[in-house]
Length: 373
Ligand code: ADP
Ligand code: MG
View: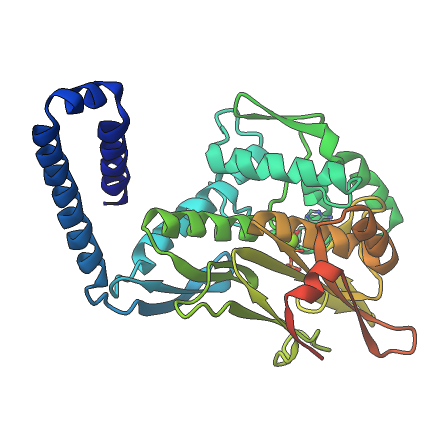
């Protein structure tokens, strides 16, 4: 419709100012005047039809919300649509297809077959997108983020296989298999410096799954939505009244089973947020907590005061990867990194030496905050 209006306007301008019409108008002033009036009236009619048409009552957008399960966690999707179209079935099958590419929990997924050195395993588009983003973040974070931590993640008991008896000797034997420069993707094949190298997309896949669902909702012409997969969140536009989407950051719990409390709330529009925490996925042995985030530089689960990192980014995969990377860096190194990488906005919750909870956040993060404990 809008295209139609602008084309018509252009036509009318052409008619009035073209030299040919000016010559014509010298010889046929009456004819031209009549023709002009005719064109003008026709234009006016069309404009009024469009104007009154657009004033017709538009139905209120319908709120649709559903929850489900994926990647060993829950998801929640909320959107406003022209009608109550429920896209859950399509989203479920999209997420299943996603898992068949990127889930190391599925034995036949592309990533699992690559890890098993199946010679016929080839990357698809999603696999390649995740791989490239992972390598980019590894480079930018000096290797704090590294998908080749796979063998260490398994050995420390966070993979499919049973936890190994870990000591310095075991760690030393696995460290040579870790290093993002030891893998590359060439013509769809994962080339490894050592066949025992295994890659792990768990620190980034959930974020990318959010982006994949977002692209699907965009393709279905859903204008306004909030996607949450296991705490990785993306908010598109605002709610119909113009209100932004409020997303809460939880207070790090003392125990994994504790009910979440609210630490801060951010109001988001066209923005993703991802939180990595050391307080939900861990195990305790002899009074020591082992977190599922591994420091690729020494091969040990991270052990520092940082309890939770939330990162904002335009896409959820980027937010997810940096949240993990900052979790590896810890408070001091993380702060330094944020100072050098303006535009990366983050919120840290950490334990002070006296045991109280402290926070640190960047300016850009603060701007979106509606509540801060
Ligand atoms: P959460 O948001 O639940 O804290 P993350 O997004 O930080 O989770 O991902 C943690 C997972 O990523 C681990 O379970 C492990 O599989 C993998 N991982 C652990 N350490 C690293 C690392 N340094 N770089 C990339 N992936 C990692
Ligand atoms: Mg992550």
